[in-house]
Image 1: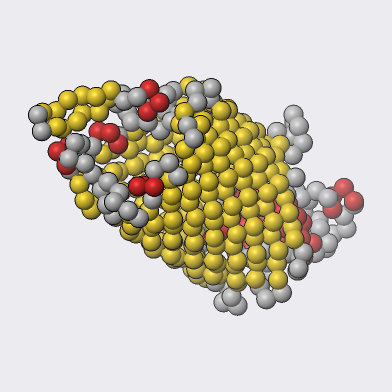
Image 2: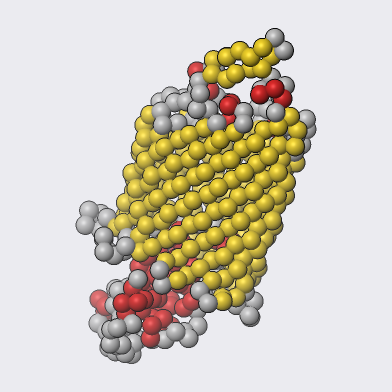
Length: 400
């Protein structure tokens, strides 16, 4: 990583004179003071130029490791590259009582073997009293593969306060078009707000609220609202511990029988190492059925691991992100006497993904290319709930 390489390079004085071009270059190492570099990194992060900000602060940390705000800005840049929610990041060195607002746009197209997340089999076996029979699923519920186009626009606003408090508001609008209709096409929105407090010890506490709405092109609406509490500890070696509480309410307008609310706990670690940045989360909780939902209440557990690495050996200012997840859920009651003789449903899902992100400066300024490959597989003791999908995407994104 760049930090390891810089350890063998002669240090340069940050007080060296700079011309106007160098002062506007985030790669220049001759800025008049460490404070100037911190401010430049904050400006780059506000514009979502996370890789450039990380490179800038890496050089600063090698020469002035005690610079106030450097570690926080570096963590923020890495978290921005990963694209995760800001409830697990440190408070920025923001200009007090002033909103910093930026907007981002992403467009991509690709192919998926299962655009509508349908069961792997086009038929389901019913276990009737007279004996098992196979029943074909309706076409809209059968697996549909094909090409698709996706787009997303986001707006993000952050405001800092003098008591080390940060308020963030974020909104997304997104959609997918495939030409197939049904559950393959959708439109949605995410709204998110958080308050983050940095303590004198270096730890953080954050409270966040979110609302999600999703509309499928079969007049089906899904709604979810969530409340999250997170505490991030002080750094020990390369890592910071994290713990929290999650509350989630889910509602399906066309079928209120599936409404539920979830209560769970999580623990994890954020690790910034010379070999990359890693995020590990382990969560477990109880999903309460709001009414007489098939299967009743549900016990859930999930493990997520994410890693991100700079890849200047491929293209300057590029990086790779890899993610994996494993989720288990177990109903507390029989799902249906017509499915596997009234068995209690068990689900296990595995997901793997790799993203490559690189600058397109040679073609167009302030745009980046994004390539993604994802695979997910869900197994169940009831065949109706087995699912498999493999997809690849190629697109561009920008921020202003």
